[in-house]
Length: 147
Image (cartoon, rainbow, N blue to C red; front, side, top):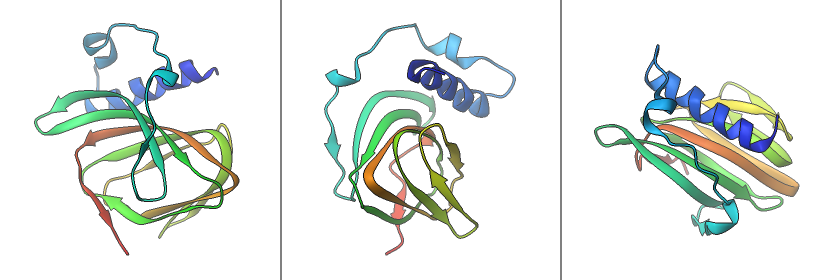
């Protein structure tokens, strides 16, 4: 699957989870080709960079957020959780691991995983770093850092 197809699939998957039984992608979005190079990387100050290219309101004070996340080589994004949002993440490039209290998932290109709300997790990149395509359902600025 090409990266654009994965992005479209993830967006529709998250939207379907928010609005079961409907196809909100067709209701809210008009097709538009975008160039990720037109968006700037933002340093979060928490060991990773993000490039946000879409935020859509889906509930009062809640959004669906779509972004790329870049974690530099050999970097640990410390344990944290999100109070109300669920993340789906697709590994575009690089390698590493994500760890929760329940399990460890090895990350490499093509791996898709979901992190539920209130699930503490940490991400570690290996020597080449990580590039992730991330959607956040019911997004609000609700990240809590555990350490």
